[in-house]
Length: 94
Image: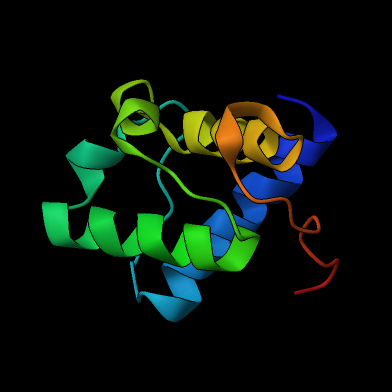
């Protein structure tokens, strides 16, 4: 995981904790679907889309299992891959 992906993953963890009240961070490599029910997972995806100004479609979801996968996908979208809208990287200290 690159430093940028690690920063994105940290922001996703913050979103899950503070905005969605998801109690514990997923372990590295842990499948998100094993930790979150379908409504919580959908809420997380929508919050990530809103925060990073990207669009994650069904094809994206097919290859995303862990928080690290989600962070890599968001980084790819921010870099212009996969048709996402471009946005700034997470702010430090947030």
